[in-house]
Image (tube, rainbow, N blue to C red; front, side, top):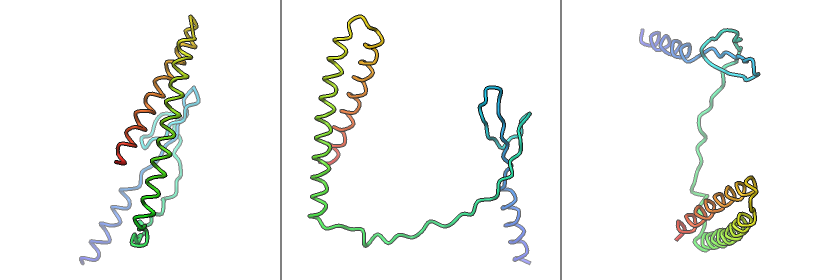
Length: 133
């Protein structure tokens, strides 16, 4: 009796999790997918997806010795420092471009956008470097 009830519950759960998918295209050509039918939408026949459990990964073999990790950290610090110096140089170039834009508003706006981008990149790089210490 209990096994029949369990089978019935599993069957209803599987049925309830299945949803119809509808595809509609508006007059501008934008495609919309929804589980709610709309005027002019076509029901799609989609086969159920097979799901697999997450594989177990044994992390015991993934450890590295302290010397290797130290070398990796030094390499990462060097790369971030070089990238920081490059970004600071590009920031200076963008500031020069802004100063040289004169009355060209489009050029000045592009330079301002570049300045903001480089400033954000510099802050992110500084944050990454400070997280390493």
